[in-house]
Length: 69
Image 1 (cartoon, rainbow, N blue to C red):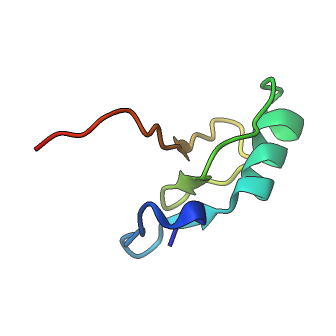
Image 2: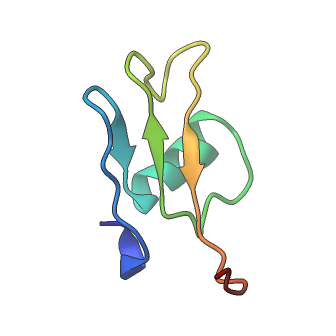
């Protein structure tokens, strides 16, 4: 379950989830991005690591903006 209880992840085998604190460290300290606060975490595909030369990950967020029936 993601922080705040808005959703739960069911990741395929080999995928990894980083919590918001570790996501902030990756975004700011390892990748040099500004302010990584406010995310719900980050997902890495199999074989991807935060410190790899060509690493990538998906940042998870949530915006409570309306409702769709």
